[in-house]
Image (cartoon, rainbow over all chains, first blue to last red; front, side, top):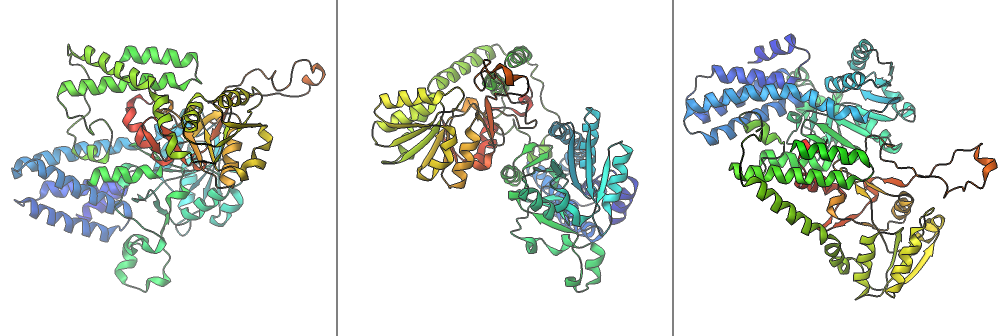
Length: 297
Length: 294
């Protein structure tokens, strides 16, 4: 399964790692030879563990969790195992199809919030934000974008290149220049790797800083995320975010002293977020926990 | 449903600032969906809204409302009649909650003229003694009319200009206002001057209570700051008799103000008191997501 996942990620860089994980798990489900639900759940759990060892991001974890939940819900309805498995596979395909449409849904919801002449600040590389800005361009809006460089992997440069292809005027700024540039921007738009139960988000390191600056200057801070990124975590501060999300899988494997390492993500609290755009609709941060409860009831 | 939708679009296009028209159309559409669902044999709960749960368990795409049912029309008409009765009773419902929120010897501040707030205060005045300060809300000065009506009920009323709001705020215990519309994120579109009042109240940590019936709740988000505005003739601000300077200046007279949700403490509506962060929930009970864009 980890080979399958790596193959998926290499073939289709446009797809989120969570979707690739779910696809890999679905493939795994199809090949599974077991005869009981319990056996299936156990082997799936092992598969998810293997996947997180390859790519320990929040998205893979939430995708895996969702898939497991999906299996449990389906298995409750049908007692006959083989029939159950058929239904699962069928529903899995439908789920994947729906999920691939979610980015377009979000773009449709979000682009009216970008006014003509707006100056947008975004952080690192997010495919959802790219899609939203694409939709805004299609609806004939003129705007300019500032992207943070987003060290240590310079993801901002990748974003800037993609935006230039869409003919959007873009400026790459230093991560340290966020406080300086905040007075010039009209709104901040970021993606999320995970949305936690409190309504806060887990995103590339530097997002929290941007949110705090935006709050201080009264600029709206919008988050775009698909619904499969909702995670069952409730961090109260930065330390509460589990280590396995903060650092890449390879670093964790070598077992070095983690205090010397730089984390890759941080947690932004819900009080700093104005609105979340998801394929379930436009939500205020307080609505997120409601959605999660509805799922995991 | 398409018929109602087209009629609704025509009506909202005629007067875009009257959002209640659109709201009622959406309520009727929701009623129709519910009645259809009930006849179709589904359970009433949860099937309406999008959710992660639905994403995982549903077998396919949603239904298409094609099947005809003879009793559907009668059911819908009955439900609409119930809604009418509810609408007529909203002001009384809100006024009934007055005693819980207003205590004796309090100083209440309000702005402009709102029938809901008038009923609210009158109901409380029957059992409690308190004072009211009304900001006159220039340039139409509807605050004057409010003050006259309140003093007829023997409530001690004071009228003051909008400029004095901040100065007097330290002596005020509560601010109670009405509004034109409530937006989906809990923000308000209210008469011009309300934002100032809200900021002053926040600064002095005075609770800001909004009395508004549920039909004012509109599922729109404030995406374009100016699309909600209604401007009227600036004659009230600067009369045409001042002809000389008119050529050199721009005069605006906006009717409405946007008040962000962080400044509001409580919404009192006909279904009870709610915090602004809970508005999204009330919205999902009243309207169906597909109807947000009429």
